[in-house]
Image (cartoon, rainbow, N blue to C red; front, side, top):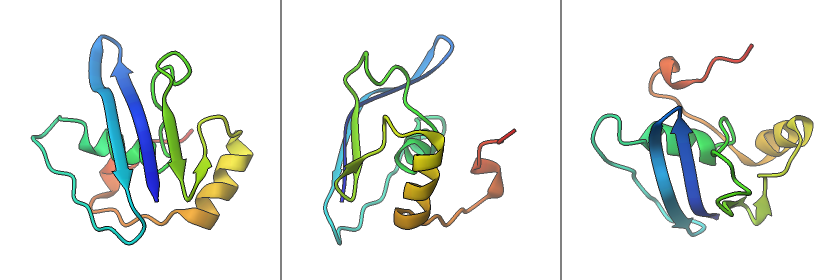
Length: 100
């Protein structure tokens, strides 16, 4: 199950996600559609723990996967959580953020 509320993401002055709420029940199949640049990949990267929302405490952002919140996890905890709970299938490798 994925339950998220009030997700915001900005890149400088460009606000891509403006308080998005998502609730996906266990076993439910969902597709995310929208125009190019609408924030679909950004939302999926945040839900997949590959990116973080902008100012989660300031916007009271809540995100839980499998009943566990990962907003406050350390990098080590997040890596373990991702390895145990999340799988990815990428259409294009360009959608992956660069890690340095």
